[in-house]
Length: 122
Length: 176
Ligand code: HEM
Image (cartoon, rainbow over all chains, first blue to last red; front, side, top):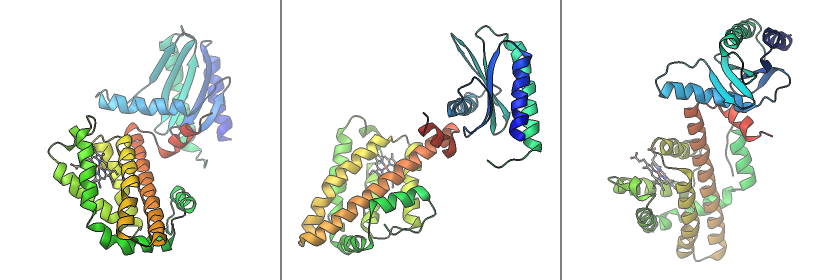
């Protein structure tokens, strides 16, 4: 039930922008809760976000909002959906960051809401 | 090894390592005779640490204190009591080493030296080759246990500082 709801959020996110290729929700421990294929998700995403949090703190940049990885073939956008969940989004290399950013933020809020209202034991 | 622990990884370590009560008690019975020779080992150890360009800077201004710490630690490992407090003392070393930036290869090198030096000491104080053999076997197993505990805590502390939980670390270690 919860997984289906999370998957639904990811499908809506993909439908909201042609620039979004794939997405996934994992815990900060690297456990995959839901993914919208094709996306090879693994614990490295959670690691990058953790390192982002620590880096932002140690560089006095306040609390982390997003980790953005830009490479030739595309973008990886990592953000917290809740304190212990990660929303990872893969987008096209020339995606409009502002537009995607808004959609991702909205999706993250929905994920947080579902996780808060549908407790689940992994 | 006889250890009452709910720590699954440590249990596995102890089961496979095979440190047994008999070996532990032979080692402990030799402790008083071994103790008087331990300062020689500490002196050899610190002479080597002072001679190496990587380790020497860590000793500046605290060599006497570190020697005392090292001596106390060696007395502890031959003491024959390997309980929860003993485990916690080894773990504390890993934690402190992260704080003072002592990397794992320093500990690995030190342990290697001890694995070479301490058996010779045991042979000096125990003329019976059978008892000496048992004591050496136990001593090596205790050193390995300490090495594992120090390194494990070092890695956990480092990962914790990076915000990487034990569960995430396990997933990273088993990435395919
Ligand atoms: C078998 C290897 C080693 C063992 C068992 C060991 C053990 C210890 C212990 C028991 C402490 C005190 C922890 C506490 O405060 O509770 C300590 C701290 C320390 N160790 Fe090691 N150590 C080892 C190797 C090394 C090496 C090779 C170096 C450096 C070259 C080193 C440098 C230090 C330093 C700088 C401290 C902090 C001392 C302070 O608080 O001022 N250790 N170690």
